[in-house]
Length: 385
Image 1: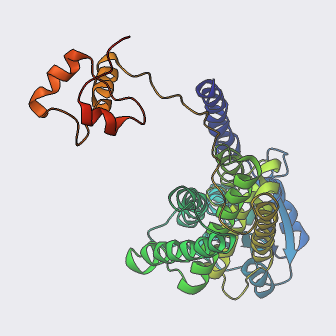
Image 2: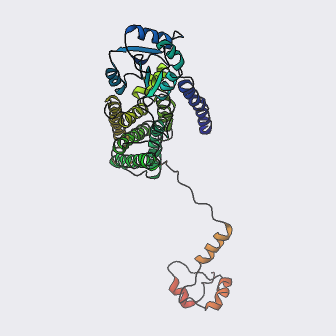
Image 3: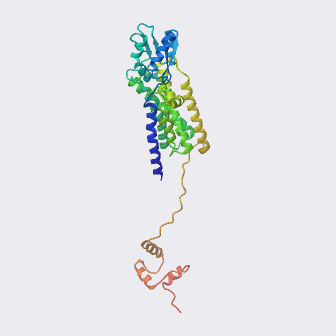
């Protein structure tokens, strides 16, 4: 029966995993993607009509009085692009670091926008991605690896070091998270050069992500048991949080459910936090750090409270089943005969020598209780009367 239950669960989780990633990232569609236009309202209206030629309100066009104001809005990631029809030549500034998928989508409208501004539109990337990461996926992979290694590390720690107190649980989760996050940051950044990462902030962000994933698994482990704790952890981080993180596809291109979940789940907060400190160090948003802090505090409190209530703060005692007493096996005939023969042993002073033992056995001489000395003296049994 347990094997059947596991097979049924995996049969449900498998297609759910594929469907979640396909629905979330398989067909990205823009919805109200904010861009800025430098100039009068006539230019903004014409550009908006050109971009929203399908009538689905894919872009939300805002007017800015001059280029410096628009550039400040882009720096704070309030808009993804700036179109300046009055520039020489007319220019569209994009920000690949804010969302590579949005930048690629806007670049596809270059010819139609050129017709609106009356000249060839030049495209300038104000915040380009790293040369080894043209699609902006490295930050997503960092967040993905952080979450998975976070709860996998917690699982392996509990399996291989199961005699730990509550303080040891928290301590080793923190040590493991710091160690793994540091190696990931150093290898992806300085060693391989895939991204120009600020080591200290990225290290701490990844460590927080790993600690959160481990604490969430630990909470489920003391709540529903280690046998099933992986299931809700996997659903939370792998099936929902990862495709909604906005790392592979910009949040503005995700379905509404995934866009909302990505904003408040740890993986999405990790992607936005690492993006801010890497590409926008002068305009770091507080929201992703607050989300990570809330998850860290909340998951730790829940794990600690449930653990103390159910198992105390010391070492969790292993569950042992009562074993019924087992009756000794019956003696074999050969063993019984040997035991009986060993019980009849001549005592010192008994008549006869070791060589006459057979004669005594044949004559039927036996030692009665309490009469050993008399029999040893007479050497014979009393004749019948």
